[in-house]
Length: 157
Image 1 (tube, helix red, strand yellow):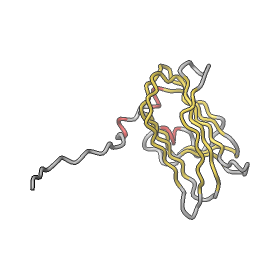
Image 2 (tube, helix red, strand yellow):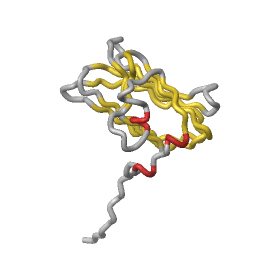
Image 3 (spheres, helix red, strand yellow):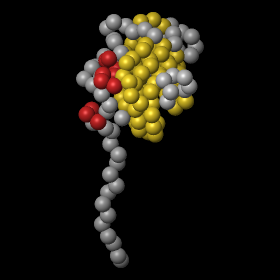
Image 4 (cartoon, one colour):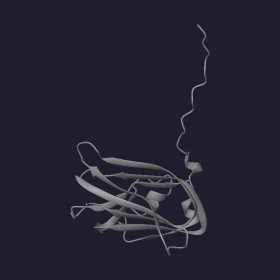
């Protein structure tokens, strides 16, 4: 019998914190609201644990405006809901022309349940050549409940 030993295939790993884009130096942020105890910086910058939370219930928008067009290859979103059962929908879009037009990246719904599904992480591999605006819209409860939108983490590479 013939045999040969092969080298295991390396799994692609998530970028380390230093490989994610430094949002603080690259983008201006527009948001529809924020809870003072959970500012948007808590979701965008490494080392912040609390994440962002809206100041009130209903649909919320987070918009990143880049001073210079950015090439994006990876987008990681993390949503956490520990206490309320709800179905959330989010839409992630990008603009190459300063917000004159948008192209949808993903639209997704997720069912949160305190008994099981308390976290949703999306790790999107994309090839967006010149992003000037990245927009995330969140409907925290599609049944029009009083849920508050939140975002534990948004990272770009």
